[in-house]
Image 1 (cartoon, rainbow, N blue to C red):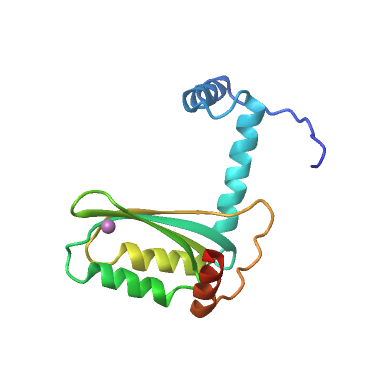
Image 2: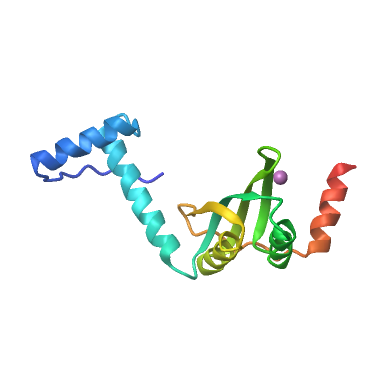
Length: 159
Ligand code: NI
């Protein structure tokens, strides 16, 4: 870890007051320094994922009704088509009709956004959201996987 540098920040008193209230309400940090560090990290991560070529991870959370005609098949074939970007998926049957799906994606920012747009834009998906993030240091590109290799490794771990 690099050394900690202290620096002074000049700020209008009412702005500082609002900042302290913001920090207290969210219970984000125990002191101003930690709160400022969190905001700086968030701003830097946000700037990195804005670059379309940056390697990122994303989660797409979506709600849909599985009775909607062909929807499950459409979402499945879309995910098979993009198996290289999808690293995991969680499916929860919420009740007799509704499903929650969380799809974890990894790839270039533009690919993750395009995949999310395709999933959330599929007719019948009620609502959903993409959360995109990355690591502090540049994230290495995911290794290319084949569908066969993915199945093979899951069979091997079951033994
Ligand atoms: Ni379901």
